[in-house]
Length: 302
Image 1 (cartoon, rainbow, N blue to C red):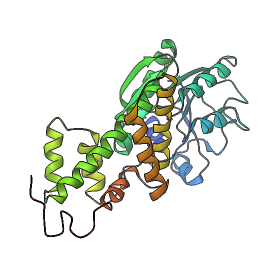
Image 2 (image 1 turned 135 degrees about the horizontal axis):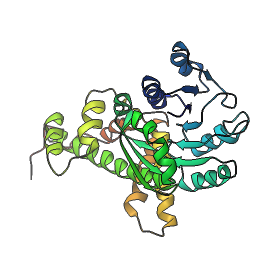
Image 3 (image 1 turned 120 degrees about the horizontal axis):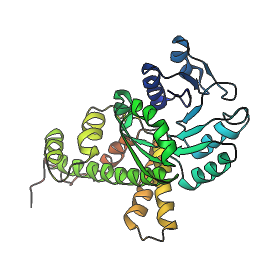
Image 4 (image 1 turned 180 degrees about the vertical axis):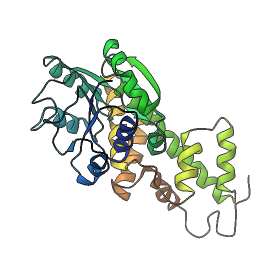
C-alpha cells in the first residue's frame, strides 16, 4: 500500500483521511487549521501545517479551489517542492483547465496527476460511500484504486486528466437544478395545505425523485437544521465552472445560465458561508402579502 500525504482535513477531507487511517494506510496529514490536525496527532500520525517535509508517495488534495491545490503542491512549503511525489490525486472540485495545466507542470517532475472529485455529501463521506469520478492515465488509476476504494463506495474511471472535474461540475449543475426546483415545488404544495414529508415521500417514489427529495430536503430542510455540509460560496463556484464549460463548448444552456443567476443571488442575500439548503428559507420568504393563497387557509385546487 502506498504511503499517503493528505492535504485538506476539513469537514469532508477529515472524514476521508480517517478512512485511510482506519484501513491501515501509512498516512500524514496537512491542514492550516490546528484543530483539524488534532484527531490525527492523537493517533500518532505525522501532521503539520506545511506539506514539504512530510512523507507520502501519493498526495491527495481535498481543498476549496484549484488555486488552493496549486499552492499546496507548488507554493512555498508545497508538497512537490522539496521531494518527488509519484502520484497526485486532486479530489477537490476544480476547473478542468487548471488541473490539466497542473498535470503538465508536474509531469516534468516525474509526478502523475489524477483528478478524482467526489459526490455524496457529508453523510456518504462519513460512511465511506462517496462516488469518485476519476480522470487520468489508466496505469496511475490502477495503482491508486485501492486507496480510493477505502474512501468511496463507487470509483469510476471517466477518461483523461481533467475529465473527472468536467463530470463533477456538470453533476453539481444537475444537483443545483433539482434542489432549487424541488424546494419551489415543496413550498407551492405546502401553501396548498399539503404535508411536506408526504410530498417528498411521493416524489421520491416517482419520476420526480432526486437527491434533493431523498436526502437534502427531508434530512436538512424539514428538520430545520440546514446542514447538508456545502456552502453557497463553493456551490456557486462549481456552477460557474459548469457555465464556463458550456461557453467553451459553444453550447446554448439557458437553464444553466438562469440557475447560476438564482444561486448567485441567493449567495449574496444569505451569505457565502450559509449551507446550500438554506435557500429554502429564501424561497419561502417570497410569500405574497395578505390576499394570497394562505390569506384564508389553503388555496382551492383549480
